[in-house]
Amino acid sequence: MSLALDKPRSPRRPSARRSNGELYSWLFMRLSGLLLVVLVLGHLFIMNILDGGVHKINFGFVAGRWASPFWQFWDLAMLWLAQIHGGNGVRTVINDYARKDSTRFWLKMLLYVSMVLIISLGTFVIFTFDPNISN
Amino acid sequence: MTATAETTAGSRGSQPPVPDGAVTVTVKIRRFNPEVDDEPRWDSFDIPALPSDRVLNLLHHIKWYVDGTLTFRRSCAHGICGSDAMRINGVNRLACKVLLKDLLLKGDKQTTITIEPIKGLPVNKDLLVDMEPFFEAFRAVKPYLVTYGNEPTRERIQSVADRERFDDTTKCILCACCTTSCPVYWTEGSYFGPAAIVNAHRFIFDSRDEGAEERLDILNDIDGVWRCRTTFNCTDACPRGIQVTKAIQEVKRALLFKRV
Image 1 (cartoon, rainbow over the protein chains, first blue to last red):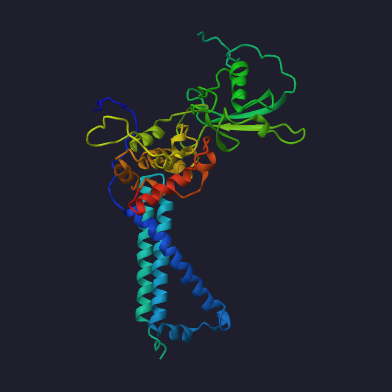
Image 2 (cartoon, each protein chain N blue to C red):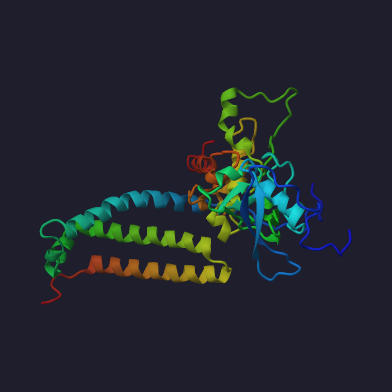
């Protein structure tokens, strides 16, 4: 039992939403981080160190790689994981540092829109890449 | 009380004789008087003090003999009650547990000690902050024994090993050093903060308690344990030596594996 006038000026906290969203996002950050270490370091190693490094990269090189479903999957996984991992990180930064609810809302909207745009564009390119485009 | 008392006079009259072996230190205090100031300001006092003095002694000296308007909390003055948490030289400490000899500069250089109110809570006056948001978060995690069913006729027995699990978090004195050292709490006051999580931990891992699930649900929310960025400021600040960040991680683990 509590009185209606019990601590009248104490701040009020909304009741818990009983959702595991924050747990899953926290877990996703750890798991995707581990995967990204392999994917990104592997990508950097292939692109910048093996076989003459960055000078070998041209249209033909990219076309050759994306002819294989393995590299398509590698790049797709890297794109999605990096975007969502980074986006989720920026989301937590916005949650931590935005002072007004409206600032928080619009910054997050901007973030989500940019994430969706980049993920869709990248996915679209990986799957519809045409090696004969120059002909 | 007469309103004619000079604001620059201490509340206990003139200064006592300076003891042998005293050194002069500058105490720089961030002050705010809501009736006069629009913005907080810095005040400096040159105080004679012994190396064995505590920072609280310096504040007493100022309040008693130099400027009686200086406002701060202190109750037991021996590190038990947790009233005098403040930011001393940029870190949260209890003023009654910091010895001057640990702050003195080497050689003949004059030491300056900066003292600010703890961050993230509204300042009422000088070093006195409104602790209500802190206690609201504390109350929200149900920091009391929750049981269901019939009450046992005897006391609730607990093994030594079961008691050991939450021993560390029983030490909390609610001084707010940890919560107000947390960068997430500074910018987003709706975060429960380390102290509330420590006190939830104390009951979540208590074998006699049956409210673990309710508390875990509360801490699973957006303002709960997932907000923790493991900066370890809280562990560093705790005057009782509680491994605060570890306690928060244990709550995260309990949520992750659905096991207390």
